[in-house]
Image (tube, rainbow, N blue to C red; front, side, top):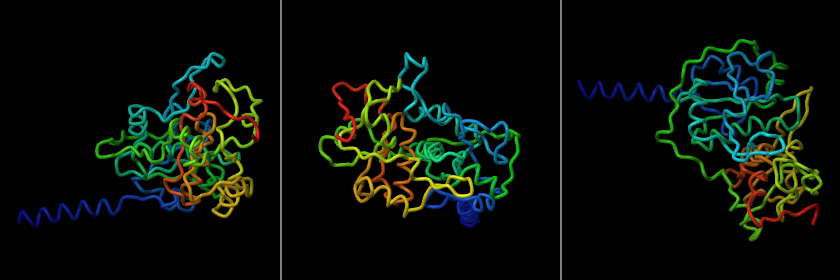
Length: 313
């Protein structure tokens, strides 16, 4: 009898595991997919827009603000604020996950605004943070809130009552393979073992004329290729979607990036870089050959004897 009972228990556990919701391999879902899984108890929907949640949001969604999954490690004397540029501490991330009702078997869908070409970076950054902390069952709603509304998805302005989740780090492993460091930038710059991608594009930071209080000096990493995150989105019916593989492949190739070799994305604070990292890893299928420097130039320009190049030198 004991053997039978044990078998039944094991079968039940396997059944629960099989029933858990799993996001698509490319970490992107559309409105139809989200609608079809709205009733799933393991689904957590997270709004990462900078504003708009109180007015209206996807029904049942919780809100994450920047401080919930990012942290600053420097202070700007100009802005009188800390400079974000890193994933939040493990303690902060654990608290954010638990207060959002995330359990160990949950699936999370992050959504952005969808009305600005580069704002998919917000959801991509949340995805990056979750993956870094060993929670890969996350996805981005392509087209964000704008697509959801256009497709007739349910919205309200009610903050849901959330039962505290049981998320834990136990048994997890931080995903160091997607995280690049300043040392990795040094190696790429001096040896060429990896490509560096400046996600700001060829703007005033690239040519050195910007005056950004988050950085100590302007310019770009020697040998870097400039590719703005916003170029990787396409507008359709007033909504900005993450572009397809053909678009991404064309834009990467156009600036001289080889998707068969490692690419490290960076920007000013690791925000825009999340967009190119996500497209590289999931749209182009680069896997862990696509990495991101979370500290980016807010960090690197504070390292001694690190020089940046200005313009197309």
